Image (cartoon, rainbow over all chains, first blue to last red; front, side, top):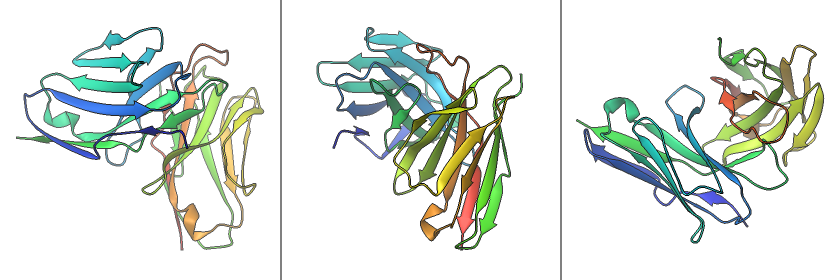
Length: 113
Length: 115
């Protein structure tokens, strides 16, 4: 069935390096995507979002890229810090389901000293 | 501005019992959504309330229900608890009840354990 999924369940990076977390989605009609960060014992925290009429959006140390041709979403974190260690989820808003986000399975990012 | 609050944070119940979880959205937010998070299924949408009305519902059995009050606070109820209901239940609020605004702010969740 259609789903939002992540390519890798875990990712380890050296402190100071850039991180790239990937996400594949299968519903080509999805119009809105969000990346969330979830630390242990906490709820998901909004990082950045992007609408389907865009292919790139930048925030503070983060960039989201959207490739609609291959239905791929990525989150780039620049100069990764220990505080970036968390599980990262992508979520999509499918047409006709306002505020009913469909989440991917998550990627555990570990920042190594 | 205070964030989304959920009570209680932790709960242990026995199979067959029922449970009520509470969520207070960010002040001014009118839409409240509930999600269940488990290691096996990930984050799954339960339902969404706006102006005291359920507007969207996910694929969960009727044992899962909710409501929203005039002050936008929301509760969800699970009746006849099963072991598989053990999960982190997350509440999220959205600023605008109209279409076009999707950003959701999550609370810390309620960890429910069913024994």
